[in-house]
Length: 309
Ligand code: FDA
Image (cartoon, rainbow, N blue to C red; front, side):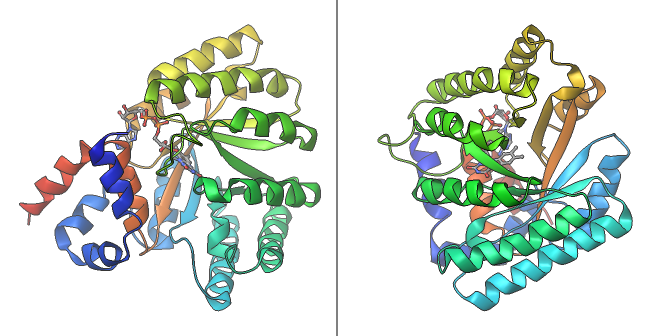
C-alpha cells in the first residue's frame, strides 16, 4: 500500500480531521464530484436522471459507527422514508446500508430488529436492501448476520471484498443460503495478515471469485453484482460469462456516482444491468477520504478547488 493511500485511509478515521475538514469550502466543492448533493432530494433527482439512461441506482445515507440507540433509530426511520419516497416516485432505486449505522457496535439483536423493519418495508414494495461490508474486524459478524437475515428476507444482499484472503471460503459457505452478493475490491486499510497487499493480487482474486460465482449465477443459485470500475476486469468477466452462456442482461454491474460516467453508460448500452451507488448526507468525510485513497490523483482535484471561487 502506498504511503499516500495509507495516510488518506488513516485520515478517514481521524476524529479531528472529520470535524475540521468538511468546514472548508474548497473541500466541500471537491466532494461534489462524487455526490449529487447532501440531501435525499438531491439523490432522488439524480436517480430520476439516471432512469432516463436505463440505469438504476442504489441509495446510501452516509454515516457509520453511530454511538447511541437514538441515532440508530433515526437512521432506520430515514431508510423507511427513503423506501416510501422511492415507491411514491416509482424510481428504479434500492438502498445499501452499513450495519454500524443501525447500531451494530451497540447490540446485534437491536440491529437485527431495525434491519428487519427496513427489509420488511422494502419487501412490501418489491424492493431490496444491500448490506455494505465494513473493515475486516466486522467481516465474521456481518456474514453471520446476513445468513440469519437472508433466511427470513430473500430481498437482501451482502457486499464481499476481494482483497480479503477469506472471501473465497466465505462464498463457499454462503452458497447454501442462495446468496445475493455484491463483489468489490475493498476500500479499508487492512494489514497483510488479512488482505492481499498488492493491487495485482486483489485483481486476480476478484476474477477468481467471479469465476467461482458464474456457474452459480447460471444455475440461479446466486445473484451477483460485480461492483468495479476496472475496465480490464469487467471485460474479463463478460468474456468468462459468455463461456457459461450468460446473456448480457444477466450480468449486473455497479459503479459509484461520478466515477467513469462514460463507462457506466457504455455498459448499459451493451445491454448489461447497471446500477450507480449514490451517497448523500452530511457525514461524508470518512467516505470521501476512502474515495481519495482509491485514486490519490483525485487530490489534484481538491487542490484545484482551493483556487476556485
Ligand atoms: P480500482 O481501484 O482498481 O479502480 C479501477 C479504475 O477506476 C481506476 O484506474 C480509476 O480509473 C477508476 N477509479 C476507481 N476509484 C476511483 C476514484 N475514487 N476516483 C476516480 N477514479 C476511480 N468497498 C467496501 O469495502 N465495502 C463496500 O460495501 C463497498 N461498496 C461498494 C459499492 C459499489 C457499488 C462500488 C462501486 C464500490 C463499493 N466499494 C465498497 C468500494 C470498492 O471496494 C473500491 O474501493 C472501489 O470500487 C474502487 O475499486 P475498483 O474496483 O473500481 O478498482
